[in-house]
Image (cartoon, rainbow, N blue to C red; front, top):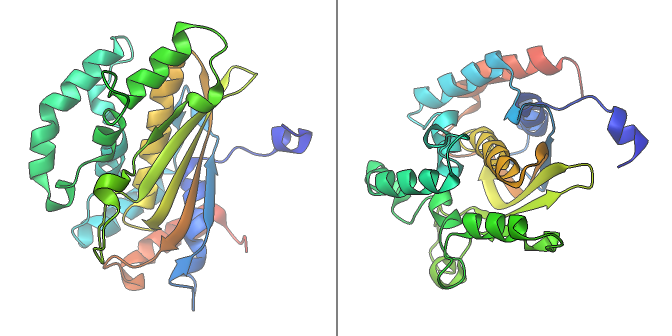
Length: 257
């Protein structure tokens, strides 16, 4: 890590998201951005710091158009309400599997699965829970290659189709990188992502996933970085719906270009 990087101001989740999608909200802004890299490194005991005004503005705009809140989107990646850090992680998996049928029935968009469901399945025979496998493998003995700390979401056997619109999964994979300073960096890749209906909640969910994995590995969450191949404006959100969001971003970021 360079000295300049060490002294750079911390980037909270709201600020990182706002800076990334701000060009879309400006007059004549593009309908998409490619690629987009967002990095969050401002945490309080693993919890990402946010700007309350910006978060409220986003949720208000989403509710107006009938879209799920940032919290609901985040829960598709990591169901934070089901996790108690003082209990064994297996209890989280049991609780999630118990409510999974209800989650799938709650929305037609969930019929092909949810992200956390993919994370706790699809692993090697007899150890299908990918998250549990990589955590157990890394903590069981010293010297495990750090490249083994990754989970796959996209499954070619199920997801490589000729459908014009699939909707799921846009998140392809997540990797976890322990650092020599005792920290953990989370890296995620999206092929495509909606800037306003999904991105903020996705970043929030990825940060919470990182908090969970860092806790289980006995590390400190340092950074969440998300690479998006194509960031899309559309998804039934007009610029007129986002006036409050734009104002909250301007109030937070100021006159940055």
